[in-house]
Length: 203
Image 1 (cartoon, rainbow, N blue to C red):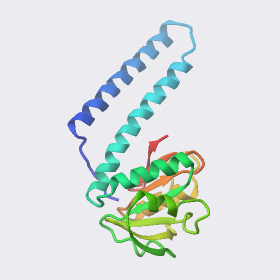
Image 2: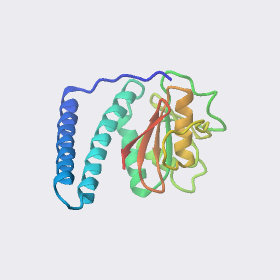
Image 3: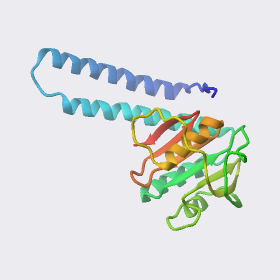
Image 4: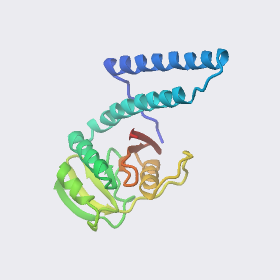
């Protein structure tokens, strides 16, 4: 799958560079402490891990918006729906079609044919709704169908154990240029998959 190249805008690049410089300085300080002092560095390593995750989340949010902007005008609705679903621990699988047609890769979906709105997406993924377990397909400004079955990943490179939603998101993006937003009902984590890779938006 072709790996897209999206440049960071200058303010975002400067923000990330500042964060990376601070992380580099902290790594050097921890290394110096370990070499010269006999003390525990676990808490400093935990703080360092959090700072790295913060940078990753910031960059992932920027790239998600960039990846979606040319294919749907409803980025705000999608991000708001994901945020509300994550807060309630309602699992979700939102598929955004880009250049590649997805009709041959999704199966057994129920037609919806409605304009994208965060309220409708939240309703679709409400636990107990017959459509909440499948993927919802968005094509530009329309919710085309819901309850779709996606192909599962053929290969998973992460060491973390992934649930069916995450494996389905990776699987579809291994076979197409689609972007898939995933909300975990177990952790409330928001992720997105593209090019067969999963990126965390909110740990």
